[in-house]
Amino acid sequence: MHIERLREFVTLGHTCSFKATAKVHYITEATLSKHISGIEATVGAKLFVRDTHHVRLTAVGEEFLRDVEALMEEYDGALMRVRALASSMYLARVGYLSDAMGGLLPATLKWMAENRPEMNVKLTAAESGALASGLAGGRYNIILSMDLDEDLRRRCHFLKLREDVFCVATSLAHPLADRETVTPDDLAQCQLLLPDSVQMAPMHQRLRAIVGRPLDECDVARVCYDMSSVILLAEAGVGVGVVPRFMERQYRGRMRFIPLREGPGVRFDLGALWLRGKDEDLARPMVDALREVAFRP
Image (cartoon, one colour):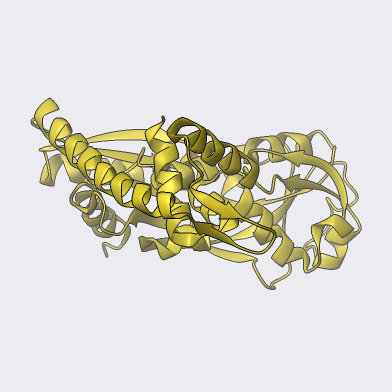
């Protein structure tokens, strides 16, 4: 029985909601249901009563929940002890958006080397969705990313580093390419490169806010599973994508990045996120370094 599936069981035991639990663990409701059924098959008992309106623990489920929570506490404690024994140095696992944060990191790492030489920083560049799921799943102690995921933000501390905006990415030959700005009504008339509602859920929701209407009413050119695919398909003329402005630096001259007319959802924050009450001693030195570098006079 996978330990992460037991974590899903614990969350479901407290929320009694497949939808809420699936969002917390960045999986689909169907996948969660399959995992819970697998646990029930392993233990040989029904752990939840499910009907069309309610989900609740059975008596066996309540007892199992108490046992599993105790097991999780022992397991997490064992992990912390073995990590401390495995190395005499602290290891801060940092995930980051390379296009957005690459320029800030060299000075931050230099500050860390000078002021916190005992800290070992492991850097991993990834897409925003992978960063969010990695932080929630314990693969990172801190991430440097876009602040789009409201569910994750409620569980995290947040240090704002700067503000950015979304713009519209098009090929040089697209009819919008000579525009100075684009409106939501303009987008509604275009074939959109739509972020996947599961793999890129925060981006999907933000695009819905920007367009101002249900996305199933829009003309969708392609569903994309990462931001790089949105950019490449837009450059190829397959459709238009809504992307962060910071991505323009890498693709300038190859395609157009047109500002969106100011409106709901257009602006967003970039910054550091780290979970409340978990590995804060590992995240804090990196936070101190970022504050020193980003806000120095």
